[in-house]
Length: 359
Image (tube, rainbow, N blue to C red; front, side, top):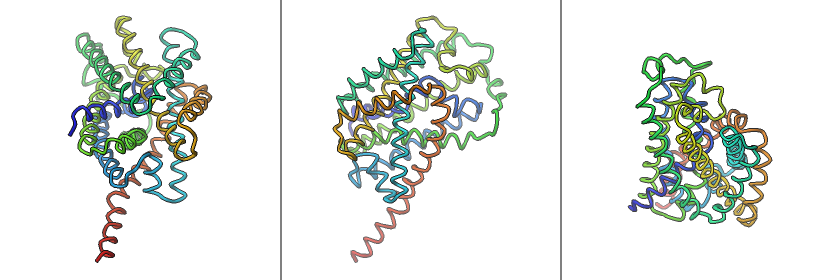
């Protein structure tokens, strides 16, 4: 097992998952925070989903020599339904890229008051620069951004511990009741499946290139544990700021409102960089898919996808996250069920049939 490879894989997984929704706190708020103390239980469950399902995808990818998420879908569902899933889940990456473009504009606008289109333009330019470097660029950008994200979030949490607010107590967290149906378990499963699918776009190509099962499994396990710790910290800081955070487009910036301008600026930079990391992952994934399915050159696909994502981003960050993330989470859950069915039921039946025919 190669430790360096494992850490790089962990960084790519974290960077792919964090993105606009989680880094801003909005994704955590939608799926977890509203459920109070139960949200922490849900996050632990999500960690095990990451580890178990990622291991399954890695095994299938190595066994069948898969190159992209399109190959995986066609393997587990080689029919019209599989084609529909491919189309819908490809749109997930496109919408995710659009959400991040909108988020980059909203972030800089809320903090600095600059026009949103400037934030969009900056994100577009730097995404093109790294995405043209393909897998190497993906690993490079996450190897820098993920450690920086971890450091800043832990620093903010320590500052909260040093100077706690009025709601910084267990009784307040327990007292929070969800508004509407208490679907914390359902949403936790949806969230875990959503993120594990989002990582497929880079996990399967990495598996094809590295072909090192132990390093891949260890990397995903490390990534899942670190990501869960960060999510627990973020969720705690959001919970003690309920209900005010529900009215903010970038909740995590509101959480740090009592801190110095330097801390807020550091957080802003990290959130933007994580958005950038996931934007690179989404564009990389879609460009590879277009290159394989439609014979469009990888470089041309980058500009085609970014142009489309820019148009969709005009609907606004909060609107896109609130509507699209829960919808795609349900779709991703169906995708994960198909993977598990193929690996532990259909694949076993095929092996038994081949064994009987060989005899």
